[in-house]
Length: 90
Image (cartoon, rainbow, N blue to C red; front, side):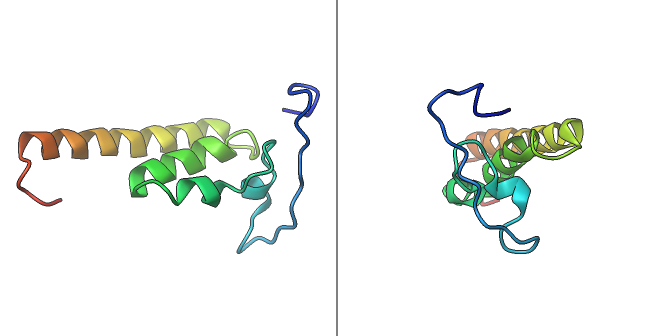
């Protein structure tokens, strides 16, 4: 993806480091860092967002999408169990 795909959106490259702000999380076309969005969701959904977010920015797109599916499926299963047994804690 590049800025020509989305006219009017400027890619705000932020400073990054491999530990606190890896490039594949801060170099999104929106200029938003992944954690700024993912932290508002539970563990499974936050991780799914993370893997979807970075899949275009790393060389392992298929693996990242499979990981996102794993977390989404886990959330579906967890939600189904909670709906069947609403008084049980997970």
